[in-house]
Length: 116
Length: 116
Image (cartoon, rainbow over all chains, first blue to last red; front, side, top):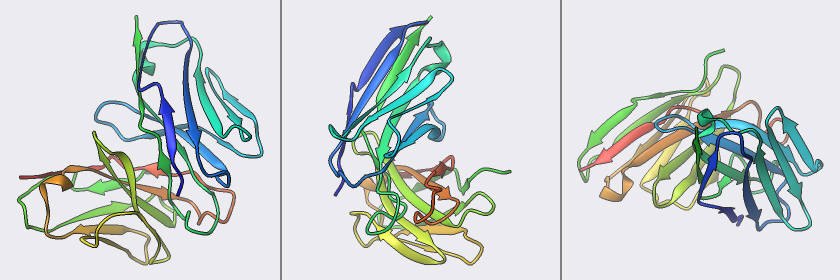
């Protein structure tokens, strides 16, 4: 089955700096890669996603890049703010069919701390 | 539009008991997935339901089961509780089965289960 590795496990930055979180996946058939942000005591929130037919996607200060050949994808946060502090999870899935229905395979999470 | 809701939010049970958790998806969403979140294992997929049918199941023992009703609401049940079942149980809903273009999963707030 799919396996997702996420690095780093913790990341500490100063406000205004950029943060990058990287994930690798094992199943070359995976074609949908969402990123979730989970604040303490809250639900995971979908912040951005990318599909395998796209190499990069951006939404304001957040961007995700995908390298299908190397089977890795990354989350980039620019101009970080203290409210960006949270745990970030990457995930992968084969979007349609087979044994993939409804199953997201998650990375282990990255604790991001943004210092004012 | 109201988000995914889960009840109860907190639950304390003793070993050997059973528990039923409930999830109401976003209106119009027909697919419900369940995940277990623990500090040690992270987010792990339990199962997914669509049209009252379980289409996918994760690597959990048979003590974990679920069902979905005609209104798309879903329940999961854990029988003969063990200490290791203490976790945050999250459900997520999706608009369509993942044979279409809509793969996004939106999470509920979770049920915090403590087994003593």
